[in-house]
Image 1 (cartoon, rainbow, N blue to C red):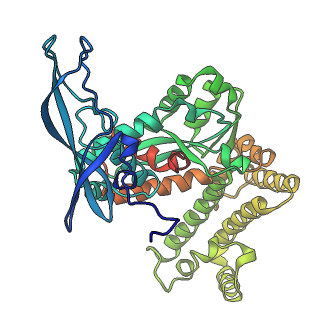
Image 2 (image 1 turned 180 degrees about the vertical axis):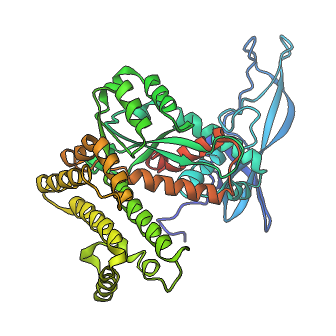
Image 3 (image 1 turned 30 degrees about the vertical axis):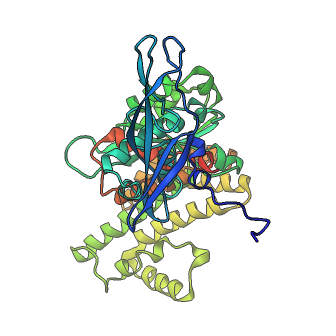
Length: 433
């Protein structure tokens, strides 16, 4: 006696054919492939010209790659009926657009599965093609076309953007052509604590002109809604923002300010190393041994690390490194200060101290002081708008690096931009059932 909670097996429902307007009439399953014979659920024998009932002329077969089941590529063998009208002589075949686009090699279910595999599961196109049992180019063209249609070309993805981040990104490591692009990130979800940041768009080139042209191409309503633009120290992004979004606040985020201080510390350490030893650092050199410890926050140092730094700074020839280290640590501590007013005051003191009377023996700190003084307004703007950081932008850059590695590199920028948007464009919730 059948169990009350179970129903008769239904291959059509299990394989999602009812959503395509099909019914399964047969199957052939082997170790490496499953073939489902199917027909349209509702026949359409009526003449398109005169409306009379047509006469069957047999059927033809159409093969469609479908969503795989049981780790087997699944093919739909669709029997398409052909008809002839004895009244007006018209000939036609059944309309199969409910099952697949015209001339497509993938069913709608197969395309949907491929798009989910790419966006949600982060599978490579090679693995998607293997799952569908089709060529790489077939899978790639189908999934990118569907991704552009339902996700990338949807203008509503630009809605409600209030905070954006902009940064450069290296999309290829070759000598031919421009290797840089500009990435624009929507930081609104991270500021509002409603979700992760997402890739909004990717622009060819890295310049003021390219970013300004992208901003000016946006609708006026969208530009008026942008309140804050987070960026690094590149002045081209700042001037482009001032020209295209004069009302927006530019913020030089903590990630890049701390990195500037860290770069000054590293440059100072290398210079002193060369002056003392006339060569690069080696594993037994005190400066080289402490290169990572110098970047560790003072509150996180172990006793052993503290002893190592004390021994390093005892030597008079390392006094320049000690000065650069103190500036770096002061910068870190300013951003770690929970009280925003005191944090801002700390940063103001650092900028003021580096903006004047820096000894000639500390060229790295003098350079840092010039940069911070020039961008003081942007640096201090962060403390008035907490949560505005380009850190998520760097995180998305890391995801794009992983994408490029999984694909073993890209040669076509248009293809790379589309893949990057599908990878980090925040489309995952839209594809969940």
